[in-house]
Amino acid sequence: MKITNIETFSVSVPLKKPFKTALSTVTNAEAIIVKITAGEYVGYGEAPPTVVITGESLASIDSAIQHVVKPKLVGMDLTEYESVMYTLQKSMIGNTSAKAAVDMAIYDLLAKRSQLPLYQFLGGYRNALETDYTVSVNEPVEMATDAVQYIKDGFSILKVKVGKDTIQNDLSRIKEIRKRVQNDAVIRLDANQGWTAKEAIYAIRKMEDEGLNIELVEQPVHAKDIEGLRKVTDAVYTPIMADESVFSPEDALKVIITRASDLINIKLMKSGGIHQALKINALAESAGMECMVGSMIESRVGITAAAHLAASQRNITRFDFDAPLMLDYDLVNGGVQYTKNMMTFTEDYGLGIHYVEKGGITVGMD
Ligand code: MG
Image (cartoon, rainbow, N blue to C red; front, side, top):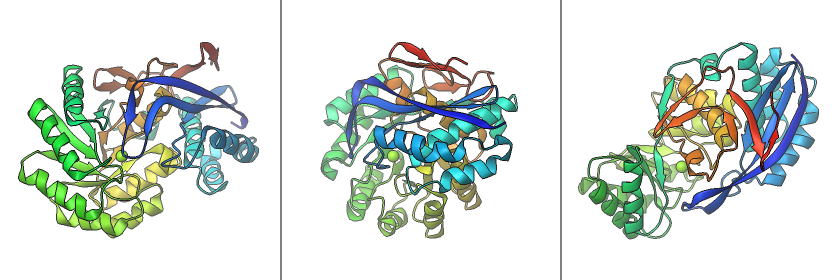
């Protein structure tokens, strides 16, 4: 089953409400959609431009796929997919989102050829996932009002974004949210690198003393500050999760060896796809460290691939897949299905995506 073509096109969908983190404010979900043809099958992938995290733009993703990856992969046989994945990963430094889009389309093809939904092809550990919902960083009262609304909408795990201005403001935000939601929600925090190690230790201990009951704190310090991350992990009882500090299996190994975090957040756009993500999860599992799978602001193409990966593995225990619910409309036919906070898979093979619309025009019917 030889790869015969790799096509790309861009999509853009407005968000219902701007998505605000310590790193950026996003108002539109943009992405490059990838369509790979092999034999009678078509596989889909997606890469959003997340310049502040992976350094990739729409143009760079498209160029990396069309000018670097495509000439190397077209003609390769998917029955030797270890070689295909090695060639993809070694084709260039970085460009992890471009690689992820191609990787997930290849897995889509492999699972279709095996006549299995992708999560079953990869391991099939569970067939439903509960996603959290993100509360963007704003003023405390607005965040608490959003949190209450999300619980009414059926979510029971809230991921609260902090780290944008001062830790005193962050403490006010979390107190206000906890006061309003009471014990109706699990609250996890994501500082997106916004604190120093000292600030993180101070703030998290304060939350512990005040009984704010925080499930975990994601990426308190700068991505490169592994020593700072380790200090925070050592100093507090609340579990600390590495996100931006871990892109590759090598990064994961560094965090595991130094015990710099308690948990790892895997994202396909950081790892360069499912093949590398499985390695990170295997390393973490070997060290007794659970993983979450999360996403960037992505449509249901990328999320479907991430959800299939997350469902397939026992050691992946937390799921952060709310991005498609923030989009004004849905371009994807098929793929993972949402019922409030629960996600389920269809019996369709591969990712189960039938087609992706481009500005009202249907592209890539298969
Ligand atoms: Mg994060």
